[in-house]
Length: 399
Ligand code: FES
Ligand code: FES
Image (cartoon, protein in one colour):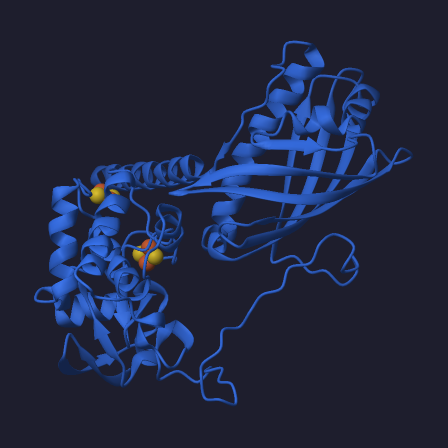
């Protein structure tokens, strides 16, 4: 245990904290400030967002012991805050909440945007709020509420403060952190992430951020499946949201993938290189893409292998490795990606089976709704945990 001293909502606080205790638990359990909500506890949903030294952070992935000396503002600390009041009124007016679970985190992130963005477009607001998920209201009212507060304030002559007046950047948003990147002029500078297209980096050098194995079977002979996989355009049409451009018979192909995650619709444009070895019925697809609007980039490699399972069945084994950078990387927690990928691959397998059987659709789905998949994965997990708990309680009752 360590004693941590910090300021919460303007009040000096000193309390014991385990080294592993995250800031949200510290705020809720030692200070009884329960307006900070916990949803995923993995830094994905944004429900736990608070301000640390004026910067929005996810308190579920911020260690309390890293916040010594910091100034923390929770939703309770915005009770008398002018922007907080304007946002609450706008959220009410625009019907921007139903259950309200996401609302404290939404208001904290929205306040930061109101302070620093002069005249953001609807898309800018969607991108800026993409770290906060709402699963019952939808985003139209939320975006409209934020836009109206910004519009009103600018009309009243209140300008944005570039960078919200911050002079330092640090881990978890705390200006007390060590990793401040400062230029010779003293101004803080952002660390930029560069994006490389296929061919810039050799496969031997490239390391995936995460990888997983998947497999599926189709009821067709191995040569039939192998020949189908040689038709890149046909394969792409089985993948929801994917489409190709240019010569689809070439070794290098280009195209795009449209997907929807929460309030963001992203369109990754990129290229892929396909290598096939007929002798072993195996190969690799390595590709990279970039979404201009969210500045997210991805790079990945799929190793595939076909295994004959008799005269009319083939198993397709896949090993998928990927890297995701930019705002959409917040959805890249490996087990969630794995679950979502399992569902995408299940849809892909169904489409391949349908195409090989001659019953498939000619038009692929125009968009991959990863947000919908994300929530259905979460819902399935919650349901299975409740079932497990129920079974455990029933067993305990019997003994
Ligand atoms: S609870 Fe912290 S991001 Fe979801
Ligand atoms: S209002 Fe219910 S989750 Fe957003």
